[in-house]
Length: 336
Image (cartoon, rainbow, N blue to C red; front, side, top):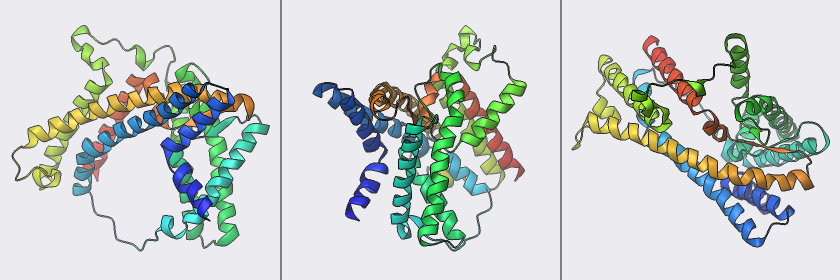
């Protein structure tokens, strides 16, 4: 059991370690030099942590106030009895994780479904969700593990392969795909784009006047968007009888709303910049390294990675999607 827990908690559930291990195995199989193996392995882990730091800056230092504002003006959820699935069913989750990953590798080895799911935290999240669903349905023991393993494996195999042609159309190559729970929405978006869009007119080809050339920098545009969002939310809070200073935590301090909005907006730009740098570092190492696994163990396999890896390929589309999501969220907030 100790070995199983080590594999689950110290490898599968640690994105940086898991991807670094994959890169290391791939480089060894390619018979790279010791120096290249060390560099590629550590750079993969460093890239992952840089990506995570960027994401942390965005969620923890930038948009946390947006979440606080939404929570302040929307009705509180009714308290209900909860079960700590991770604590009570951790072993079952780990077993499902290993079984599903093994099935994924075998399917990639012997069928045309060639993606291998490498999004570390999602390797844990899917078994967690399906175990929780099984527990809620009253399943226990082998039935619980079997159900969760089947559904986890199916999603890990089918989802990235459905995303593969969409990723290829955006990136221009077929070296990786996306392993993430946004597949259904991505397929819906692709279907709507096919009906209403035009491939000849890409968001990445938008003509921006020279005077607004700074808007081409996603970090700057993102910061401006966050600032506007906070300004709108400020007035929404006031209109609902809430004190923004209390909700956002600057009441009684030496600074006020201007500093709060400015710093949170800039942190978003910093987070985006850091995150994209981490993505570039990780992709530059994990994709070539994975070729060793593809050549030696699972021919023609490609890695299925976390969704931020696709961000640098269409930054305008990313920003437009973010703006639309924010506007939609604010409208929903006003209507509820």
